[in-house]
Image 1 (cartoon, rainbow, N blue to C red):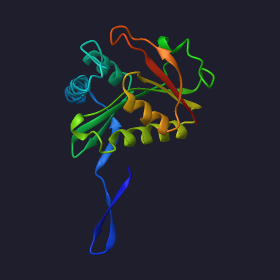
Image 2: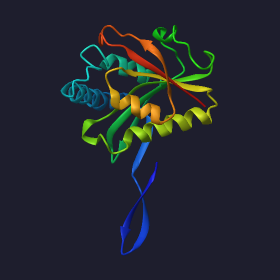
Image 3: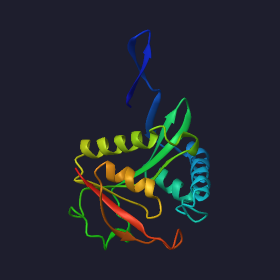
Image 4: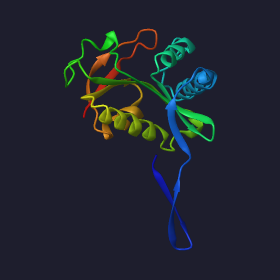
Length: 185
């Protein structure tokens, strides 16, 4: 977690933010589902139709927990963000011309921060953690997709060095494509 400093009496002191990233457990399911429902509502209010009643579902999160691929960012016993990291490539990704071979890749899905905490760097913390996890475990790249109409996400990933490679579609979510990105490690 990043350190934050504050100015006090002309000297600097360091304050370690009290947050942690851990594997989600079954008792987190209600909080996770409420968080993503709040995200969907906030995105729809901004005319970003990325998530809806078909995705993400409570059963999808249940499966993520069972597979031990869902992680939560928690501060003061409150879940503020989530991320899924997996080695499994979705079938929709098969036609994409990736920068690396289809082996030893890490895939990111369902990155979300509760709208009450948007703009506080929590998505950055989750991605910093996922990228460090990938490097530590010697993955050759990180792959993900993001909604084509969510321009803020494009900038977020491109600023981090991810390269946009192609489009995929999830018809139950949107008529618009999702852009695939890869970061070679």
